[in-house]
Amino acid sequence: MKFPRVAKKDPIEINLAPMIDVMLVLLVFFVMSSTFSTVQKSHLQVSLPTAQTKAADVLPDSVEIAINQQGEYAVNGQVLPSQNANALQHALKQTLQGRVAANVPLVITADAQATHQSVVTAMDVAGQLGLTHLSITTIKSTAP
Image (cartoon, rainbow, N blue to C red; front, side, top):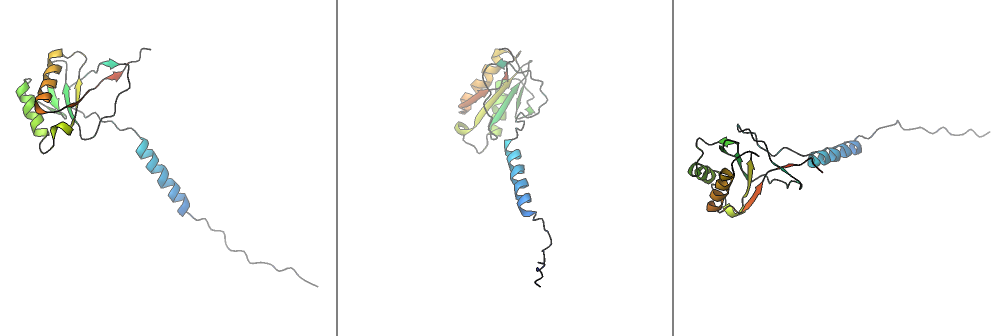
């Protein structure tokens, strides 16, 4: 009589390496696809104007000029002690040290109620320093 052979079964193992690889890929995907706030916090309260178009991405090496309703300036979050063009020009020169001004993007974040003159002054000072890549921050309008 022939008896069937009983095969020895290997113990069941769960290989965690592929699961860890998949989790790392998902982590990288979510980190890269997340949106991070690029607006720096400053002591100026700014209420942005609205626009119909989609906002452009702000580059991380950009320089930001914030202008509040009273016409006070802040460069990269540092509030300037004076509201005149000379103080703004001095602050921008310090911020641009070692960088070519023509290659640095400038973002003007002005309050919707800020005077037109304060925005034009900021643009004029930027032009005098050679900053040519200019964008103005707005928020998307909710009106259809």
